[in-house]
Image (cartoon, rainbow, N blue to C red; front, side, top):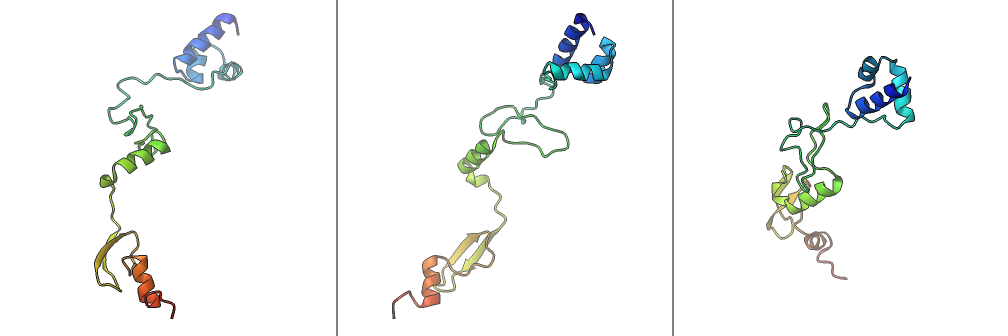
Length: 139
């Protein structure tokens, strides 16, 4: 492989071409291209994201950074765990709380709602103590 071929490989690799495509254009074996790219730190393809590929909804909900969507995987909405947690803390009204239950307290008889526990009996810890232990007094 001569110097002209090496420069051409670097140029084509930076344009985002695969090893096979480069090998066809430069007229060397695919293995030679792989070996050269590995020795020169050109393993990763750095394809520029075009405006056609980037959709307006492919940005982080919290910070607005562009997101890279991968075919076959669930669509990303946040760029990081920190952004996801921050956004949900600021927007609790958008949570889809399917497991919201309505009860009547077994001790005081007041109606209350609880999230996520379908077997709850008491509206508070104080009512539990009062009903279970008779008010918590030292008798």
